[in-house]
Image (cartoon, rainbow over all chains, first blue to last red; front, side, top):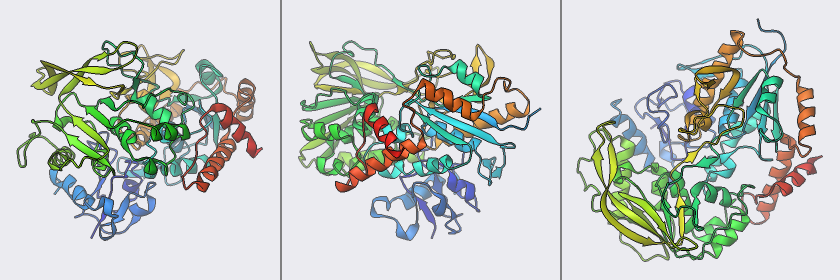
Length: 88
Length: 471
């Protein structure tokens, strides 16, 4: 299980600042940040600590097994970001 | 050398750009996120005054974000927290260029950060653009969000078809607001007069025109996907050039682009139910001319094809020569915001920004001491809310570098009580943060009775009157 960022994300990156496993991308220094429509959690790197969920100012982050119906497909969306980016 | 008094900084504009700049100047003890770790940039105390033209703060969070996106407006929590930090003041209803001048701010403060956004918009540059019935999406958005400058916009919604030029997120917002069932809008903080106008609206079809192809839609995924969830609205995706399933679309297409194409394909295959309203996404089409005698009656549009631009290596749209008329009584151009100059400051007319390097304002290539920009007036109208956080951080880094190097003009700086006194003299209807909280409280309370998040006050007189209620 991992945490998942949904379509509410505004890329405020408070989550990146507190993530102990550096699994949220693109961070502000990384390529693609300026163009990003949201940030994503790498499901293979996430350690389920919920630090991100606590600090998200727009409540965009959910545990993978408790995502509102509207955002169900975001588990895949988060995973796909890392696949296409060559991080997988 | 840095003397012992706090640095005094003015920020012009209380939108996300300005508020993120305030947040970085009034750095929390944990520090600023930089190169993958938290570091302390603020080495001495800072006092920040945010000057805002409107009596209300938060810029496009209040005046731009669509009323049916309340979850995004929650970002104001971050700004409310900044306001509580020692050294912060909000001066609302104070216009730079009218009540105070840029050169005065430069004298009164050690540094000034301009975060004024983009108050204008890109024009199409075609015949008929000035006909009544053609507006910028920026104006329309400001109107339905109750922006005091646009609350009297006379939008005629007695027409059956509207055309939106451009297919970015603003285009998606206006298409959605024009078609969303009224009972959904009744639960939002949309301006009351806009709710009344939309209740009487006869608009049945909104055609959204994109200059380039399906792979180049400027919308983001969430905005495209929520169209498909609108109750009572058919989504029509036109275009024989929509790539088929499994077809290789672009060698370098990223996950976000592929997902957009998938969504478009899904819409294209969905049966048209015959709902009362529809949104048509039309691609490879550009406006050529607006038609009509004393108001917009239609639009002459050109069919485009894509070709490689040898200069940039990117695909660009070129007219095929095939043209057709679309009957429409309302045309909204959503092809981008554009900055407007501030008298007394350099301006790049071509890009619509204040020229800068690392956030330092440049006058003919030379930094103007103690003068900075952040947000859209620095980098142009792009990105989402959080893009402005990094942008502000980088500007604040330049500020600290200059502060430490003794490059700030500190000789004539005026202390905090004196500045407030002058500002209050210039604008007796000054609205401070307590005043805004009184407005906020009143709006929320009026909304609560009707099951709405708030009912906005939409003109300056009412806002100022309500702000005085806290006294």
